[in-house]
Amino acid sequence: MPVEDINTRAWKIYGQRQLARSYTPPIPDRMSWTPWEGIGPGAEILGDITGRRVLDIGSGAGHHAVHLARTHGARVTGIELSPTQHERATSTHVDVPGVEFTQGDVAEYLAEVEPFDAAYAIGTLAFIDPHRALPALHDGLRPGAPLILSLLHTDLNGLGPSTQVTPREQMILLRDDPPLATQMWVLAPQLWEDLLTEYGFRVETINLLHHPDESAAVIQQLIRARRLPDRPALVSSRPRSSRPPVPHAAVGVGAILVSKQGLLLGRHKRGTLELPGGTVEAGESFDAAVVRELGEETGLTTHTSAVTLLGTLVDHVEGVLRVTVGALVHAWHGQPTTQPNENVGDWDWYPLDQLPDGLFVCSAQILTAWQPDLPIDHTPAQFTPYAVGDGAPHSLRKRTRPPA
Image (tube, rainbow, N blue to C red; front, side):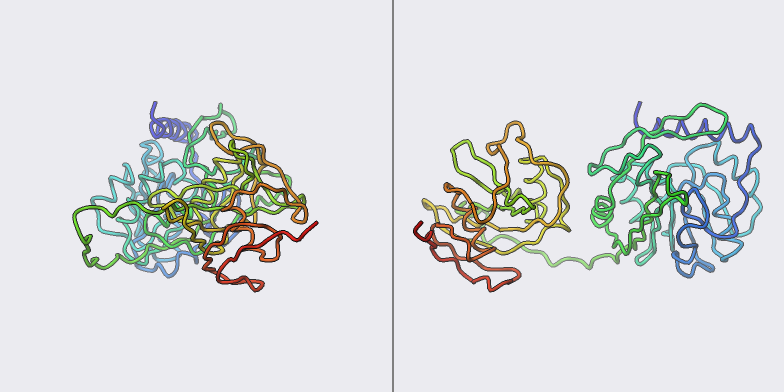
């Protein structure tokens, strides 16, 4: 069964059970972005919404929408996919001024209506594929409109967020009934930020909201984003000729990771010792290439925010211009291990004052660009720093180990 069908079925059953109990949540005195009250900000993070059109995504029983209309004067539309959840809202709040409820798919709905002035989702957007929901929200919000998302970060079992855009099973718990299995996109904050940026939003803040009981594992993310203005029409460009240029350069990255045990190096099948790194792929930024190569070669995970690009090294090898960008990785997760189908493995940490012979020349060039005083011998290369520190030179010259 498709993921969103699983979720639709679960929330339909949930709504049926709540209708059978005749349970309606009370209208809150204050906007709450978590399942528990009194934690985090209130409705003020939506800005001034008086008289403005606000979209409640996955509006459920409708109590948040009613609060915003009554207390803050907003004109709120609640969009809800589950017919039983929609019934809960309309059976109780159908006549509330400033509130309307619509049953349907949020992406399809937004394609047919005028853009909203603000939107929010309290725990609900994680049940929709972000690659479908976020572009729809971009088109369904006016430029500059706030988007507030409350999302699960760590669940009741202590399982934290994923670094991959894939859903996983999560349970909806009910007091007197069996739990309902759903599929949720429980993603790391950096991943949500990357996705929102990709689809035309600027992330302003991401806060982690903890349960008031310190022993409880569950944590919520609260993301404040804003829909960016539409870009002006681009001036067209074209290549100088219909034929592509003759390939003449190889572009790669190399990553420096230093722990208490020393510098991370792996052994290539050809025998050289190397920094993690490799070839930059088409359309990929240098820092993203560092993150990808580090994961592929060592199994370590990091984020682009933990990567500092040092500069560009250029040399010439057998008729090919070799361009290498060195990077320093400040933080990572996991332990380096040999990965299947990779040419470099046997990862280990080497003290900087006891570096081994046999370094790959690109790794040697990166290391002396980072710390010019390291006694490493290598062929010369031209170095252009991005951020000069500790007297790093603008070009690398051949360095020879002092005699033993």
